[in-house]
Image (cartoon, rainbow, N blue to C red):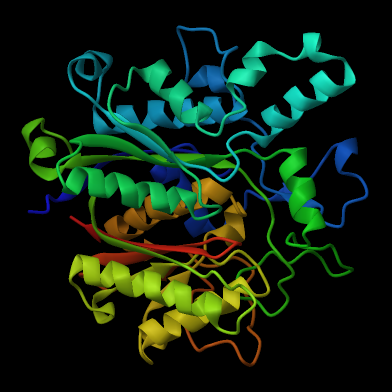
Length: 410
């Protein structure tokens, strides 16, 4: 028998706020976390826009122990865990008595730490390579460090499937709870902004390019030229429904279904849209609902010239001609592409949207190209119809991964 999966807490570290309410408010106001990149290292790149955190102070969230053993990604994850645990009412005393797990999605872990370790060893010699850096070069380091910091004694797992990692982590954690493997799991994703990842995406020609009239990392817009790289960490506390009720937890929402698919042939026409559509249909089948019951969509679209259209084609196919009646937004228009964190950040905002009845708009969206499928793309914040209780989160990777998650208001 499947158990119900309650969402009892949320924690987020982002360029638009460090709480779900603050993040949602900023998105609905049309604030942007994107800004011009500063620093000599970034001179000469075509893309000049990013969403890196300019004011993140880990000491604000992590106190009582030295932070030296945690790199930037680890600090962001541990900070998000602090907020999610507090938001869900888990105290240190409770954590010492009950097992709580952590499932983290990430694309890179900490590519800067890996690169720095290699640089020191190659340039200055092996004796100068930092042992502390070595411990953080493995992709599951951030999850392990956060679990050590907060005494999380349940499962500790890291999911790596590109930019879809955060939503995949939520899906995996939800199944752990649904099938009785765990009663409480922190799940979500994180990725840092650094020169190494920025340089890689720039060379792959995936970032938005500067032009005379600006840079257009605007999802679904006809002017889009790529995405703006950003960073964030986001975690949700997932608990078995009856256990959450027994401890008197506030239930903010419910994960009711999820699905995933992969496109192994990126160059085949419509291959990407087929994978995205299959993931969404799998999620509706898992939740035992029809696409017509979905009230709104948080799209994965980030300004990619190809993948944005593939997602739009998939949504049109799934909603079978009714896509123009279901509001669709993309918060990456304001946050940028946060990679492994993106799906979890979207889920947090969608829960807030279902709770207060307002879906953020897609900042800067003007018009789409002529062959873009007809969808109800939100250019401004949209008031949801009364009774809207089911929302879809999409997460699409650059290398074929597609994940979909259905969340419900309680």
